[in-house]
Length: 389
Ligand SMILES: Cc1cc2nc3c(=O)[nH]c(=O)nc-3n(C[C@H](O)[C@H](O)[C@H](O)COP(=O)(O)O)c2cc1C
Image 1 (cartoon, rainbow, N blue to C red):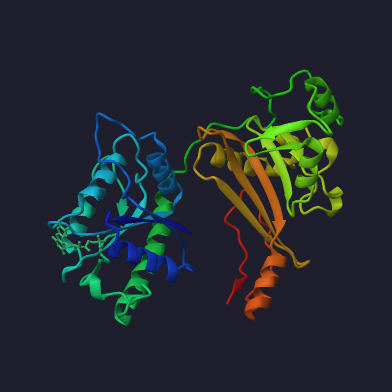
Image 2 (tube, protein in one colour):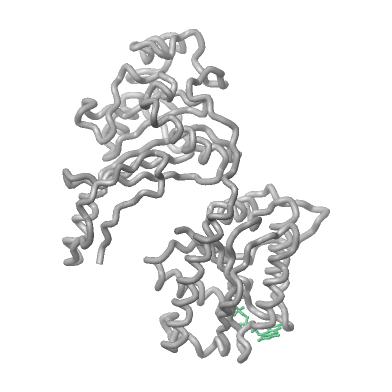
């Protein structure tokens, strides 16, 4: 589960930041916490809209991609700090990432009330039209006397506080699952998996179903080859050097463009010996030809998820009886303007890394480590029940 934690203070030394950092360190096995800082967001100004500038669009994307949000608010003059209110105004003006997002409110302040008045106001703000978050009711976590609450390592000192925090975080996880049942699935435009259209880089006049597509497309475009140099963003290599480089990657790499055409893989092995089999004659095919019919819905879902920006990475984890732990990663490629440019699919066996870690730390896998999941592309949350203890 992925959660965003918003530091509701722009102070350099912030107890609300310490609280979120504490949660990130100590509850990492429950969820992944992505901490967002608000200190460099300009004051909201309706006449100078910066919604599309990288700072805010990054903020927006991270919240959209999260399963839930925890806001840890400071209290200034019995309400939330102006810096936090300003960010919430930006995020309810032309961007609306909180819409139907499960949110938990917590906070820390210097005095005994532990930001209670700010938290009440924050709940009201989050309920306003334009924000429309789904705030977890009750379950107030008020960290009063914040200056004395942490030790020098940033750990909460009071055991009762730790237990209470742990309890409400568990409730928040449940709250997120309950809210997700109510959510409408987003409707995305359908994907042309047969690549019938063209994009700027489509090599026209070459049959994409041809077994010899690579040679024909190279001839048609007079593609650089062998000792020809290619200028990259941070280097110049010959095509041979590029091939040495890509072939030596400990990953199976596949490139499909944003027209859903399979353009490249870093051929290292024969199909039968690969983690996910590919054949040279498949290169150039539309994606629909590279997958069995029954998987096409899943393939479409992955592309929709990446193209829409809902996620940058979709992972499918497949433990197998032969001792491998294959991870299929579908990573969105984007240009400088953030537009979707296709999929970088990289597949690797994680087991050598896991074994190294276990060896170094004297730990072992427990639970159903040998279980084989039949994770399909549509079943993207499928993950192993193997855990490291
Ligand atoms: C302008 C101002 C107003 C404050 N008002 C309150 C207040 O109403 N209630 C309170 O408990 N603390 C108040 N404080 C103290 C905050 O609790 C304290 O600054 C707190 O640490 C803020 O959280 P942070 O460390 O994450 O920035 C105020 C601080 C400032 C600077």
